Image (cartoon, rainbow, N blue to C red; front, side, top):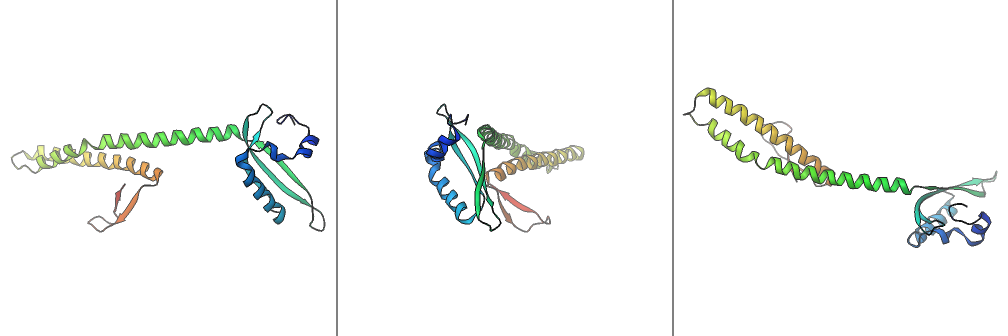
Length: 183
């Protein structure tokens, strides 16, 4: 074929294993023998040697063609080059991981300065020496800062979920169905 540089007859004479990456041969043989024994379809992603000496990822699929007595007449197979797809998937996974790391770092950096501001607003709101309208404004600030902190915590939780590090601990408090989140 054009991919291997050999004719179908040459390939039949030598076998396909010579084109499969050495790290993939054992699993390939194991799965192929299983398919032959069970007549289950064969499917495997593995690397094939191209005429220029480069290995490219392929998915090989084969199904048995049976006769009237349910005996295998032949296997019908296809090899599809999936190298570009695998590279695109790897790039997407890398980008997703980088995004998660960025969100975690950003969330932490945004959350850290809010704690002292929130505590100061709460302390000032309790100061009876301040006029009521000022304390009302401080209360509004406190609620909005707390809301901002919760939104940032949600960003952190998304990052924890993506990394599989979010843990939930149920506890009772004054708010119904509230879960304490930690990472």
